[in-house]
Image (tube, rainbow, N blue to C red; front, side):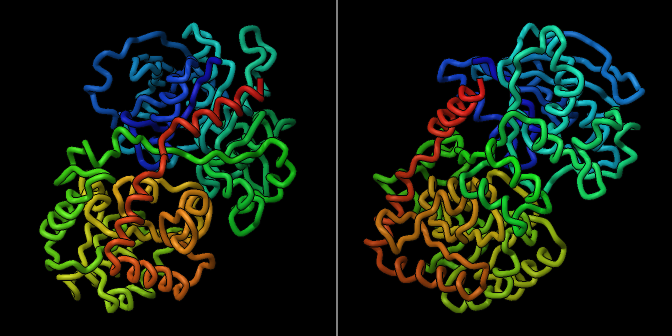
Length: 470
């Protein structure tokens, strides 16, 4: 098969979240199984120059953005057996940051049209175009309106992956003709609840819909999780399925990771003890064998931060220390900063995101807390297990699909069902009981580290899903 992955970000070029990890790792995994894969992303200013040193200029063309015609440059480079294309336009992408601009709608309208126009110039006709999240949601819409019956565009199937249904690309109706260039007689494809909803357009026009975990696929049929799109998704269940994400097990490997203080594996955990000592010293926490809970996350409601805040001092009384890294809502940042000031020997808080420190927290902590309201997939719980740090999670989305409670056979973490602070605290208490039994804790750590969260199995499931489309 020939597969083109269209995304707004991809590692190692540009990243703001889990989407970049998927767009950077999944094509490589599929290519390793004998398929031809390409990736296309915008050519952002933030992309390090050294990664584009060998980029080849392919063509320049004009792209229709409603009544405007905009310059588009196409660049190409190779990485890990995958061809990477970059859509160039300084006006739209030569800015600091990836998103959050007043004209994001127009920027990604341009990108989506450019991806389809690019196919005339690159000598690569995909069997499948795999689109990801709202920034690429108009690719299937434009394909069905303008390209489907053009020469060279026949028999292309479009798969759309929902990484987080909360972000939908919602705008006022004025963008329909003025920005998107979609005729009024096609407005029904993207209109929803009085707005223009780009994600709704992809749900309507894609040949298949994929979510990033099996549980999330059925959760988003429920109004609690769907952020208003449950009514349209219920009618499209026939083309909806969930495939759990993987992680890059070569990059996240405690036996080789150069960011951590000491290397170790499930066969020899002595290095993890050294990593814990180093983390305590680095963060200025008191020495001792008390368990460390790691938290690496965005400080927003749906990550369950309100549960953590409600029970934080209760957990401190149980004897836990905390290594916290993240940023987000001001009230949560202020809360964690206050806790660090009040309990400097037990609580460390670093605001922002420092990738190397995140890895040292994964390696040096004993538990990793993720009490999310919703979690489409979640990578942090898989990374933490890779480093022998035991996740404590709420059973939702990908957390449910990857973490099995230690109360059953082959458990690899601690889980709780309801979104309730007392239930979360109970899971934390159970983890402490097992931690105090050193032989039982070592067995749990070994089981967690032996879990296979690589991309090989998810890649096979994607290949199967794409093959069924064809």
